[in-house]
Structures are given as C-alpha cells and as structure tokens.
Length: 456
Ligand code: ADP
Image (cartoon, rainbow, N blue to C red; front, side, top):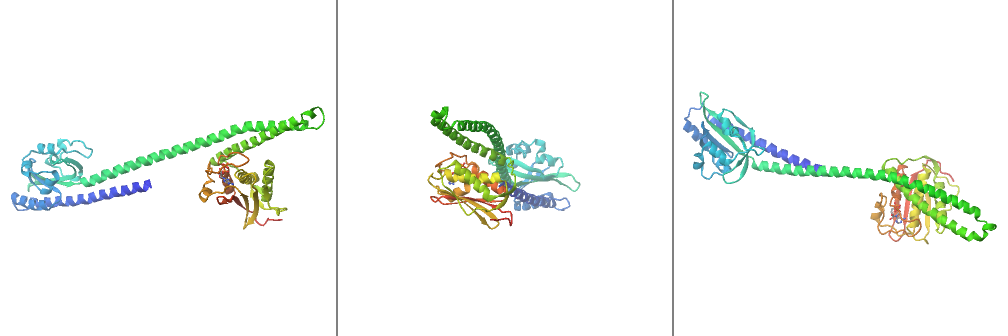
C-alpha cells in the first residue's frame, strides 16, 4: 500500500513537471515573438518597435521586461508588476539594477543568494542568451512580501549591425508548481522514511524470531537430557521395589510402605511424561520453524496406529472411558506415513479431549474411509469452541481464552495442534475441527490411503 502511494505521488510530481515543461515551451515561444517584433530587419523606428512591444506585452501572462543596454527598464508589462508586487511602476523603473535586485532578494534553487554577476541582466549584458532551463528555479522576495519561484529566460536585443541595443527578460511564475513539488517531495520523503522504518522493524522481528527458535532448540535439548536420567532412575527404583514386593520374607511387614513408595514413583513418572511431552513440543516446533522436521515414511496401517494410541491413553488415564469402534477387528487401512508422527497426532487429539473435558465424560475415536482417504476423528464432551476460535487454535502458541484444563495431564503451551497440523499437511493430508459451544468438539484428520489395499 505504501509503495502504491509512493508511485501515485511520483506520478503526480512527474505530471506537474511535464506541465511546467509545456508552459516553458509556451513562453519560449512568447520570447521568440518578442524577438521577432524587435528584430532589426523591421523598418520601424525604435519607438515604434517599443510601442509594438508594449501591445504584445500586455497580452502576455508572463512578466516581460525590456531593458536598455545599461539595464535601465524601458518597459515592463503589468504581469511583471503584479508578479513582483510593484505598486508604483514609475518609482521602480527609476531604481538602478543593483537597487532593484537587492530589494527583490534573488536566490537560486538551493536558496543561496545569487551572485551579482550571475543575475539574469548581468549575463544578458555579457551577450548571453538565457534559456529557461539555465535559470529554472530563481526565488524572488516580492516587494509586497511574498516569495515567488520563477523560470527566467532572456536575450539581448541587437541592431542591424549586430550591436546590442537592449535586453528582454521573461519571468514565468512557477510558485504553485514548486509548492506542489515541495509538498509531493515532502510526502514522498515521509513515506520513504516510513517504508525504511517498517523494513527495519520487519528485519528486527525476523532476527528476534530466529533467536527465539535458536533458544527453543537449545533449551529443549538441555531440558530433555536430565528428564531422560530422571525417568531411567524411576524405572530402576520401580523394578527394585517390585522385587521387594513379596508377601513373605523379611520385608513382609513393610509391604504397605513399599506400595506407597511405588505409587509415589508412579506419580513422578507421570510428571516426567508430561514434562517430556512439553519439551518434545518445544523441540518439534523449533524443528518446524527451522524446516528440520524429518519424517520416516513407510507403509503402515492406520488402524494399528490409532489402536496403539488409544491403548496408551487408556493405561495412562485408567479412570477415563475412551471408546474405539469395535468393528475394526482385522481391518487394514494402509497409509504411507511416519507411524510415530501420526501416532503423536492421535495422542495429541486424545490428550486434549481428555484434559479439556470433565473426568466423568467419555471420549470417542472413530476411523472411517472417505473417498480415497482415511479419516480419524476424536470426539469429546468438553466445552466446545466458537467458530472464530476454531480457526485460530492451529496457530503456534495459541490457547483459547476461557478454556481451562479440567482433568488429567496439566497445562499446555499451545503448540500441540500447530505441530499436528504441520505433520498432517506434510503427509499431504488435512486437519479440521467441528465444534459448538456447550456441545463438545470433534478434532479430525484425513490422510490419503495407499490405493486398492484396504482389507478386512
Ligand atoms: P495445548 O498444549 O495448550 O493444549 P494445543 O495446541 O493442543 O495446545 O491446543 C490449543 C488450544 O486449543 C488449547 O490451549 C485449548 O484452548 C484449545 N483446545 C484444544 N483441544 C481442545 C478441545 N478438545 N476442547 C476444547 N478446547 C481445545
């Protein structure tokens, strides 16, 4: 949008410049007609020539002034008087060239005082012809206090013998055009500055994102290493306790205490599992951001993947009802996929369904063939989601406001669904959610089946 505005303003400026060019050509023409009128080939006397000039002068909208050889004004048209704010032409005419210019305070395009020998009359007196492009941008402080910009052009007036008898100068008022140019340039400058600022903040954002991803990658590696050790020690302790859990022998009296220790170890194990999942999510999301998520693709059976994920959750949350349709016995729904990653998606849908619904609510998993795809859907009886949130929840770090964990596996980071979506998309599949506030949700994904291999 910024670029379009810049282009538009540049176009406006070019048009203004073009218009100025046309006007310049026009007054070059006017100057030429003045030259013709005063040309020495004409037989009329100098007075008659000046009379003819006067008549032409008054019809010209540019300021035109005729000087004698010394720079004394012989005649100036009313357009010139108006332009320069001269209220008393007779007084003005009596001023010397130096006096006139010191009152008009002439400056060049850069705003510097024009040196006296660069003034239009001084140059004409040296026999130069001034094209408007030479003095394209002179600023005059007018006698009534305005500041005007002009293009100035002029030529010496020569007699038959080629001797100089005077000079003629045309002043073309370009104040309005200059003002438009200035305004346009000012707006352009502001827009360019804004563009530069937004580019700078864009690259700062990219840099911040890069650092964030680098941090996530390092932090999740560092966090996972001690977790692996803790988990190993828990498993070892549980095995040792199992060997001591015998109803007879020396430790028979301590059986209850040993069972309690085992329960504590189970709890610790659950916490490590949760922690491990969070760290795993962080690691995955940093892999996704860095385009490093690898898939180990193989031919695999979707029914088996779903069945395993359901069994894992049944044993992790033994108090919950997780239904899986029972007509799947013997079914093979072949997909070409990374079985671990697809299992991760099913598990994520399941753990969300369990944690965002009350513990006495069931969760149901269904698998069905839809066209050339297999569709897996996880339904819960949780709070349900409004339509606008259904679009947002696939985004990185997004957590739906007002949705709270009701049971089970603890708070999340808002990464799971983003990872699920990426995994399924990378497999050429599709994810989605159907939900209504107060009526629970169905999270689903579809993957293409390996053709003609569906068997029962
Ligand atoms: P989290 O680890 O926070 O659960 P997810 O990416 O898996 O992250 O989910 C994003 C958000 O979507 C959750 O924080 C929750 O607000 C909402 N959400 C996910 N699954 C469900 C569900 N089954 N029912 C209601 N809200 C859900």
